[in-house]
Each structure stands twice: as structure tokens, then as C-alpha cells.
Image (cartoon, rainbow, N blue to C red):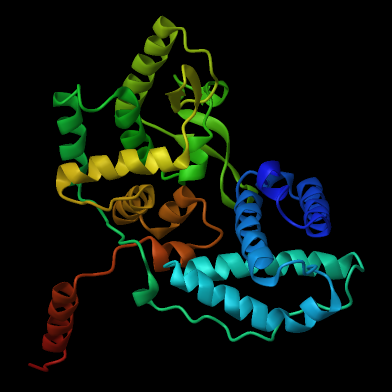
Length: 324
């Protein structure tokens, strides 16, 4: 958490939360830069709101603990007013809940103040905020060729991001953190890539991406760019790691080439996994996605069969049974 922001908050609340963060960091080092970074940011937002709404209240005081179910409900409503989705609300609530669970384990409080006391948020497909797309081979090649022709509009990093998301099927956090030290250029993969929940995987890439990476390394050498991260931006004359926001904006820009204004990196991951499933089956697709089970792959990463195709299959089956 940013100390400048924390400095404006109640000292006792900041101290106990920093103690919690230090504990999390010691036991969850593998996911510190991913899962816990998100928890940290979400809790910071809650602390700011809590201080504005409840003035000098302590997070662990008796009156706060007694009112916490109502406090969380008020915070949910506040976040809804900001346009947060159910998924975002759940993530923000989880960040607060894990803090209080830790406080119980450390004997700072006797009970979790809102565990099992809030109505669960129920999710449906209608609650999805971002549209999800499964790109066709034609769309993938169209973007590749368009960038190649319009080279002044799209730089090497645009082209590498496109190929690498589709080649590796990695999540944005893994792609963002790739470094030159991890690069096995001739072998065709990045090694020891940190994925969700601390999984360490290899991020594969193929011929086109390999060619582009070679060009990018040569360009960096010519410009004297000395930073280990693969994807970088220049700010105030200094090169630094490209943010996830900047990566998303680049992918959205590429989506417009094929008429998709809200294309996100996760759609490229889903596209890649779906194509592997179609070619080689669910088992390889699930392994490729680094999922703990094929059920996750099947439910969230495989394109649903077209209704017309389902209807035609049913008609065919009915005919075999003599039902017309």
C-alpha cells in the first residue's frame, strides 16, 4: 500500500493492517505480486471509505465489530453506486474478510464480525461486465497482417503481445512480468513464469513470435535500453515495466482492426485454449491452460456450440430413431 495514502488514515487501523500484510507476505510469497497485491489495493479503498463514513472508528473496536455486517452492506451499496459488478463486490468483500480471519487467528478479536451473516451474491451470465470473444483463425491473421502493413501505427511490442497471448495462453499478469532472463529464445519458451495461484509454468511461443522477439532484442540493444522486463514504456525519459492497463489498451486498439471495440487479453487466452481443444481435445487444452481440472476449461474456456448446430444434431438423432 502507498504510504502517502496511509498517512492520512487512522494510525491504529494502518498499523494493524500493515502487520497483517507483513504476515501474508511471509507465508504467501509466491502470490504476493498477484493475489495479495489485489487484496491490498481493495482494502486500501475500503479504509479510505471507512474513515470518511465512520470518522475515528477503530477496525477492531467492539462497536465496529458489532456493526460490521451493516457496515459491509453499506460499503457494497457504495461500490454499486460506482458501477462495480457483483464479481468486483465479492473480491472487495473477500479482501476485508481475509483480514478479519487473520485477526481471529492472531487472537486480536474473538470472532469474525460478518462471516455467515451476509446474504451471498448470486452470479448469472448476465452479471458478466466484459464481453468475451472467441476469435477465428481469419480474425487472428487479419490483425497480424494489418499490423505488418501499417507498421507506423503499430510497434514491435504490439505485434509481440498479439502473438504471445495467442501462443502461450498466459494471463495478463504473467505476460506483464516476463523478463529477458527468463527467455529461452531458440528453445521457444519463457521459463519459470509465475501464473495464478503461484503455479510456475513455461510460456511457449512459436516462429512468428520468435522472429519478432529477435527484432525487439536487436532494437533494444541499438537504443541502449537496459531493463530486464520484455514489455516496457518510457516515462520522463526512463524506461520501466509496462503496466497491465497499458497492455489492455494495446489489445483494445488491436481489436478495433477486426471491429471489436472491447477486446481484452483474456479473450485471446480463451481463443487460444478453445482452438487447442478443437484440434487436440479437452485434455491438452486443460494442460495448456494450466487449469487444476478440465471442468474449469470446459465451463469457461470452450466456445458453446451454435444453437443451429445443436438443433441439426438433434434432428439427425431423431431421424435415426424414426422420429421426424
